[in-house]
Image 1 (tube, rainbow, N blue to C red):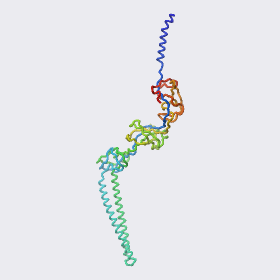
Image 2 (image 1 turned 45 degrees about the vertical axis):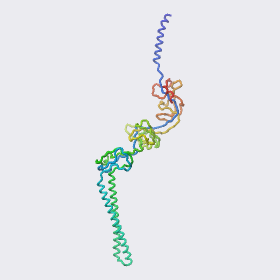
Image 3 (image 1 turned 90 degrees about the vertical axis):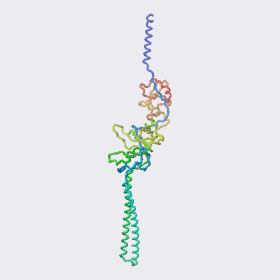
Image 4 (image 1 turned 45 degrees about the horizontal axis):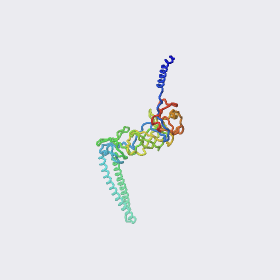
Length: 385
């Protein structure tokens, strides 16, 4: 009896040690964020592999086609111009003088042509009169021949004078064309992005193979578009006219509606990079409250197909082999293989394998999650769809 009483304290101590060990070694159930399966929109999309670029609808780097000294600089950077507006004009006083002389000579040549016409008409009438007299044996045959010959000569002189007047007109056009070459004219309406000339400076055309800064860099910013590289595998599914969404770093996550307008007819092969195809996306309606500057970086997401009101789960919930972890009523996980349909990086369609209202593990980033494990649900998120 004494032995038993002495052993009781030691037994109680051993029980306390065992209980403490069990408490210390017991792991708390992992905390997970559940997702309630529901219905909604699922889209199949493709996106660019590298950042795209906003481009101007048209852009022209303009320079005079002839070298010379800048006499007039009619614009400055930031100016808006109309099509046909003169932007830069080189000195051409010498050509102006030649043009004035050519016009004066043209007037003189036209006057001589008119004089030759009158003389030819007079000679023809005189020749006809002599011919009529010759038929009546009033005029000598020699006189008739002389008047007919003189009439023909007068007509030839008229033709020469007319040709000379026409040549003078062509000369005027040639000088005017030279003067035109001394001007830089806007080929379209737009905004002057850059000016690389000053009054008094000499400018020359770029030699072949040696690019030089343009006198004027003109941008048509009325209808910008985005060029983005798409992986060659995805590009095969893209078609002109498909709907697209454009996001720009300058405007955060704000999406802009767009449409595919062109697909490059060749694949770019760049060293150490995937083969890509350039796709051009135009904005469905350029935003009135956002200025889309050429050069902005942009991302595009092209809609390949879409289904609305279908059962869906977040794509991140799927494990390899299309397995999801379903949270049972007792909060014990069960692995379930599901059938998947349309999918993108956000949602995946699940035609079979789940029912609306099923709760699944919302993220598989946690380690140690597997079928048969009891879990705790994260706060109010337990009921969030």
